[in-house]
Image (cartoon, rainbow, N blue to C red; front, side, top):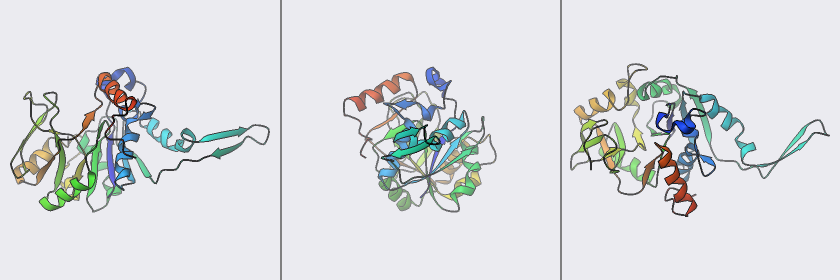
Length: 257
């Protein structure tokens, strides 16, 4: 399966750094959070990535263009025709397609723009600002067993996000984005989507979490994989510092590579 990462937003809540780079490229302990997300998927054997970029997308393209330089020892021999020698080249088993999906395109619209790259097959999808130790293969297995059109990983982080109304069967009854309720399950990303998702997207203004998911809820085809393990997004500078402290203290559950 291909992995789609939504990486085009402005990241206004962490503007201390996002005025210089897209939010997924903000570093935690020296590596962009998007790199951490890709390493999570790669750990489970998923190495074909499609990055939906928008705001300052050139930063993402330049990062991957120079990836081997970032992570290798390099000798620049200016006395010998400016020869460059790469030492200890650290290669990832990744194929990365970076797609400019527009500056102000919404999440659903961004997916629509990469349809030709996913083909007519299920694919994985997540946001470019959250890490978790969820077992991706278990999410896929659940998705297939439920016969879902879309499955999202649901967590319970508190009252900061919108909540989901989930039946005992794990089918979602209601998709309420940015509700003021607390204690509920929220969409943490780490989704599995059937190609049917593109039939629910009508243009750049389509928000994935609105019409497509709400319509699937009405049809009974949107499911939640309830997960009680670790998940943390990087929404603010405080979140960034929390993630860095977990790494510094050797307590980062998502790092298993």
